[in-house]
Image 1 (tube, rainbow, N blue to C red):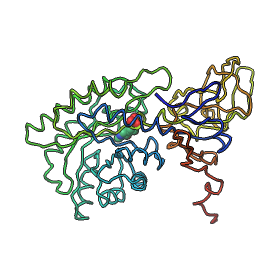
Image 2 (tube, rainbow, N blue to C red):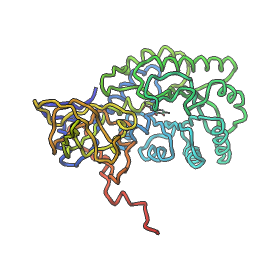
Image 3 (cartoon, helix red, strand yellow):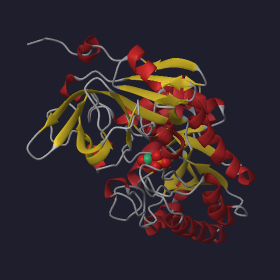
Image 4 (tube, helix red, strand yellow):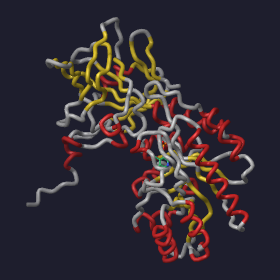
Length: 415
Ligand SMILES: Cc1ncc(COP(=O)(O)O)c(C=O)c1O
């Protein structure tokens, strides 16, 4: 459920007409619904209430400070993957005791900063990384907690670029190697192995892959227990899918009803790292039609939003519903909706039947809240879009549009 819908012929976000935002702030424009964002977090929290998990929103999905703050205020922790995300998490006021840090390639500087800050724990993805964290924490006179990220080798049934729990992926550690590392755990006096972590992929719409992975890891934890190895935390990652087109993903309650039987008597502190589920349908990208171009074979609707603003269609062939901000009884036409960037991969939709639109009209690209702005770039020297949060009838600018000066801010003419 989300708070974007037509009232009469105009498209609204909560109590605000979206075309008014487009006129006021220009396009391309990201618009987020505060209610949708926080509701999704609260639904997950409520579904899992009986085990009281720490829900660490995955910052990579949407790293805007106001998005993070809105969730932190509701009790969320944050899942980070870089020094930059740690910086953001601190700026958003996230308690350090609610920050978990994954990534296959943490640098010494990133590890140092996170150790000094006192985050909850690192999700560790290899033996050399564990040795490095142990060495750096030792040098700093600290002891940190870590969770080994296990690669459970399960099929996530999602796009191959967002599958992360197969043994051929770069992520995590296989069970056998993890067992070997745990056997040597006393060697790591400054990096205590306190938990295990899995994250098998993203946009997973069925419970099967989660169940398979959690079953494997809970069996592994029981075996460790039998050997006298105490495991305090189990981080079950993120990955919950949302509706982009005709998917029928699980609700938070359905997901909980499947997963809870595996976790409720485990005695483990459970961490979750959802990103897309919380913010995906809480955001849209608004763009303006620049031209409608007919070629002998096709019709192109050329808009001012492009792959630099939303790369998911180009990167994953992802489907996003596209709707006009003003709907009327016009014929529907099959079109490609494309941006101005000099790449044939620059499209928002291909071969899509949409209400015919004219230059100057606005469209909304739906479910663009996750991996939208956070994956945006300045390709073709396009300033990044502005970001607006709507809360009821309140309109808050949470990210100003970049200027041309921003584009060259860090550069020098030095030759
Ligand atoms: C370690 C980790 N946790 C959580 C997430 C969030 O995934 P999602 O947005 O699918 O919930 C990701 C996404 O790539 C991730 O890599």
